[in-house]
Image (tube, rainbow, N blue to C red; front, top):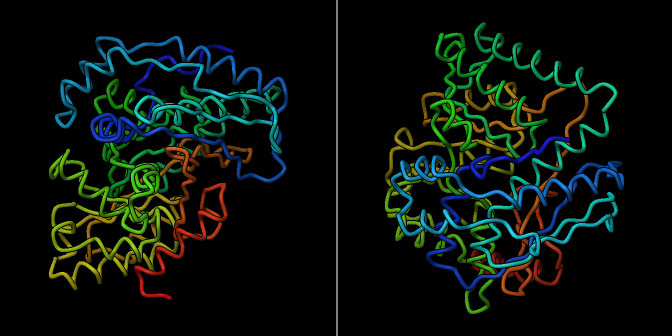
Length: 405
């Protein structure tokens, strides 16, 4: 196979916002990541594992180009010191553990300083996806690629006809794409349709992929992911993890002010998040992101919270990003239309919707500074962690804050 990752910008934007935070404020944090395949009956063959390892080794030979650093310097919230660090940063294969010692046939872990290893997640998942589909469907790969394009074309038609209306949406699919070429083609299809006003009342807002944003003059989208709460709130035993949201919001304001203003709510449940989403934070952050739980219930909860604080929810954004297709996004938009600003981040459904089933894979932090870390989430089954003992401790801490003794 050709080299899959050829640019460090072929990743999601939030890796740089969190990466700068990790370097500036948590340079002492050491983190362990674990690959998880949520699909049942999926098996990675030894040949797949060998190719995945080879592709990760190729990824470790890259470096940032002057053009890439110049583009990142146009993002006003990245400072010169951090950009100088990126100019000399490169992946280290020594941080990786890769073998076939897992139920699904593929075991990948990364271990090392957070500010160095934070960038591995998205490229590794992109590599795994592309290798898996190339090997698993090698006799019909052209058919699979063709189906992705045909379905994207139908999606554009469905928006244009008014079958679906989803307001502003962006492409969030790098980690689970069929391959980079298909992702780029589909992004360009939606950009072109948007430019020609072919999407009805919907608007294609951009992409989380920094490389394609740079290449095609699109807006790069993203702020933060669950790892920032898990590492900073749970990886330091002197901190009560039930205050993880407060720690992150304080750090974010210190570093970014009012920039990058979409806050993720569900790492230790949205109910716990709301305890720290006070008037100050709810005013300074431009909106919040839903990544688990019932989206209607979550949205109603957020609107009620804004109103309780005396903040007009029509001036705030609710960003939905959990397992979305157009039918689900249309339902959410119609429910909240006129009551708040609505936006969507759509991944697999845009760039890996084909005639064969997609993978549901993640890489999540499982330890920070030697301490187990856990994502609780608002949805059963979306939590991540390896220590039941720590998960029970974290749940007790959350219950204590919520008054559920």
